[in-house]
Image 1 (cartoon, rainbow, N blue to C red):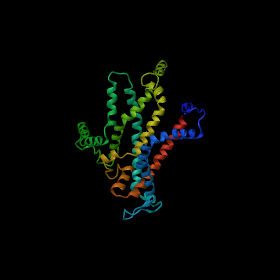
Image 2 (cartoon, rainbow, N blue to C red):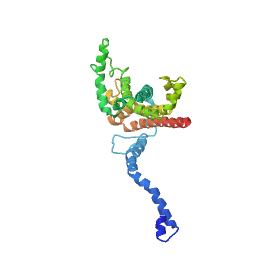
Image 3 (tube, rainbow, N blue to C red):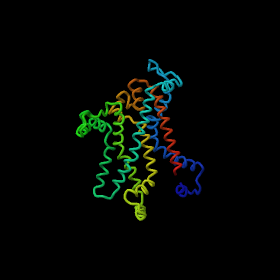
Image 4 (cartoon, rainbow, N blue to C red):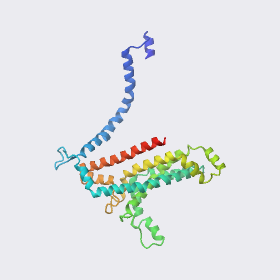
Length: 308
């Protein structure tokens, strides 16, 4: 703008030119963001507001008519719903069963593939392969492994046992069998997060630790794990949030059975919304799930700030 004014013989720009230049500079980023923001509003924010409204209303027999406002009736129904409480418990159990393995095992994998060995990139790719495999493909493959005459039961029988295990057909085994698939699918993803942290640790620290007698696996307890605490905390939070929203594994392997033993809250929401067409009740459950995830996110923010 100054160059333009100099060529025109003006030393100072006019107030109008300053305002137009500032407004233009401020609008440019939003013009680039506008297409993505419009799509986000249409497919995320507007449906979320609609779901929030539907959780306090109820459709009549004629779905073409607007829903009737019923206040907290859907939430009172939630309190009395025994199956909802069971799905909440299953979701909590799923989180407790999945998070510790996804925090600990990928760390050991990352330490193993962080070594300078010949062909180590092939091992990294092999461990990461389950992440890029579609969950549909993985679910079908694991369901075949869990069949009564599948490979897992064949191995079990080969060990000398008289009968196979009811991996997906027993209420005591079903949810744990689904957890195994979630852990297997997430190992490589969290391994990469840990690997990024490990490669940021200076080798000089390990050399200094070796002088003080911290060598072998002991160096990881003395040096690696303390320095990796931010990454461990991050993995714990991400895996916990993912565990509360698990759906695909349950849908592909058990569909919530047997006897609702593996039914999680997200799968129950799916059943109510798309099978029973009870949209309002499903929206109320979705709002409860949103509040639970929001509490976890706020706790994560507070803890991360206190650590920093």
